[in-house]
Length: 359
Image 1 (cartoon, one colour):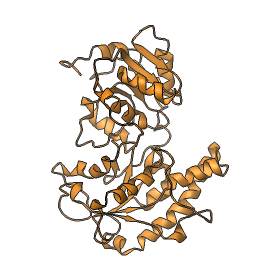
Image 2 (cartoon, one colour; image 1 turned 90 degrees about the vertical axis):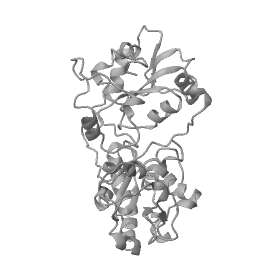
Image 3 (cartoon, one colour; image 1 turned 90 degrees about the horizontal axis):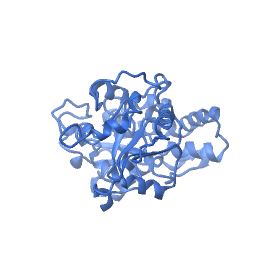
Image 4 (cartoon, one colour; image 1 turned 180 degrees about the vertical axis):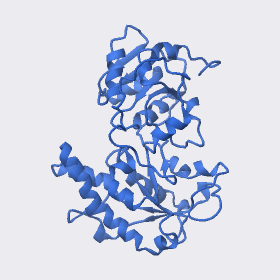
């Protein structure tokens, strides 16, 4: 889940006999055979509010826009000699870093000014870069249908509506996709029918106010994380906790989990309604069989991949999950999907899972 995923961003479509919306006729046998080119904007466009501005790494998830083109610089065997010869052209930018610079470095850290910062970085930073890319010979060759843009914010395209409209025929790489559609189409629930309870978060989900934007040619990838697979993740014997969860109560379903399970008398259930330091967080994950992964502000976060990398089975409580590599991985075989009204019964439900049964 570290640097391996860029190789598979497009091969997930290539493994099936599908009619694909590629920029050229025919099937893409594998992304390993595709060549990429990182299109770097000229210095005069690398500015923020009139000042010189260069992309930097500033944390795993939100540095995604920086990390993606950097992968190809570190693995040059996947690079084409020129943009005109490339199968896919990746536009280098870091609009999410620019947004964070304004939000935390220029006084835009209020609800109202946050939206203003998102508008400013699109109009004054990213859109000039996009318009410049549209003038390049590589863009003219296929009218941008082989261009790739990365959006690192929690909700992908919808966080950058101006840039999204301008690039709706490009391949956007995000961590969210269109989970509402995926969930309805796949019905991944562990239990085939609801237990009959009322969803305590109906109308108060991560997509209730802003629906996600996702086009057919877009690609969902994992959230980058600082954890990696270790020998401890392979150990399934020494896991004394049935269920573990620790996080801030920043969404309806997270608060519901705290109300239902934080004071559970079950000695195998540990629910901590606040964030905890990285080391104990990791230790608890290694000791747990199942780990809750509820929606927060977004329907996706690094939590899912951190749980997986610790060998803990993720238990998703979500309305809008859209998995990466959806055509390569059957997510119902590596994760448990519960409905919001099943939270109180989660320990009992999970205890009933066996290798021979529903596991």
